[in-house]
Length: 286
Image (tube, rainbow, N blue to C red; front, side, top):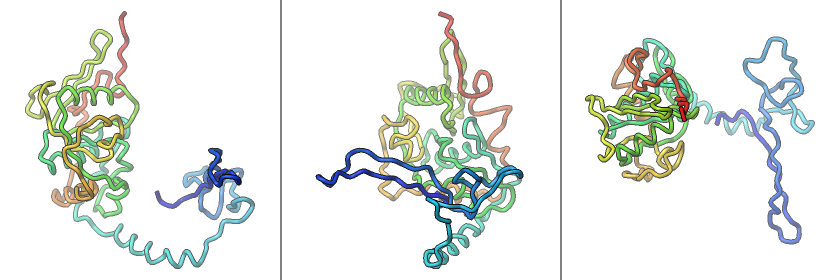
């Protein structure tokens, strides 16, 4: 996503028909840097001090900057850099963390933002869609872009209480990115060797399996990502729904100064899981 490397795919075409034969080969990625770690095509930023470096090559040829391409790209990079450095108008008292596997302050904030925008019953954000932390201090557009680099848009879906329970239970039992929630609290435990998940609204009322709730999330999930394949879409983005990144920036600007502790309290988490972390493992007594 940052133009740090490239790979070559070789596709076999039959001379007689001019059509692909189905045979193809993808070569390992080559990273575009002036030096590679000896014996590799990579240049890790945190390599050990004892690492041996050699001039970067591809198929025996040195990797060099193409001046013509550089001249074309340079003004666009300058514009992008200026946008990235533009202040949001918000600051953090300390770093706002994200954790792929477990409940975290940044995921909760984004879930809150989705729910508030859609005026929905619940907000849900997938851990895989969050790609970094927000740093302490004054925030800039680039900080928000690093956190939400995908052009995901808001989507609202209608789910029964039973569907929500099934969805959250499945997530609690896997190593996949955590689903951050807003508007509910979840208690997950093992009962007779099976997972038992209790979901309560912010008002303390149990979610009713037979009732329908409006859930604000991201279009990636509604289109089938992370086990959301069977959800019924209520709103069609059609390119019109706002980007989740823009909503987050607006929310950060509205709040002005944020304390990460307001979004995640280890003593009172939104996801209360037996054993303290995902995945929940239940041993059958049969």
